[in-house]
Image 1 (tube, rainbow, N blue to C red):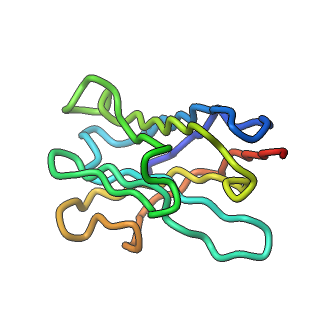
Image 2 (cartoon, helix red, strand yellow; image 1 turned 180 degrees about the horizontal axis):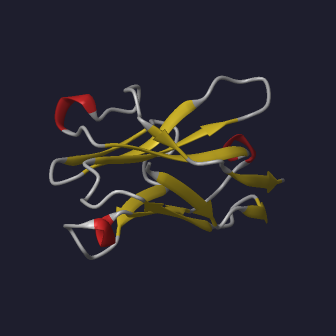
Length: 129
């Protein structure tokens, strides 16, 4: 069973930066699709950034130019299953619970609005103005 563990959330002022990390365990190969999602109180969960291994990265329009998704230097095997989200120039609309998610299926199935097989418990990000 794949398990995902997020870290790096916290409280910062608007304009600040945070770096989230996600470590996946329990899968002996590199996961084809990993991503970050977030949910603010009263809102539906939304896709923030997707890492479609060896294919592309995708970002929500609201975070383009401010957020960067990346993985570890390893590209194969379980060592590759570490996902980062560098978040800069944060604003109050970025406040929410951030979840790491993953799927063994990449390619066209790996999308911001696609289905993910595994989810972490989330890390809270709070931006104060």
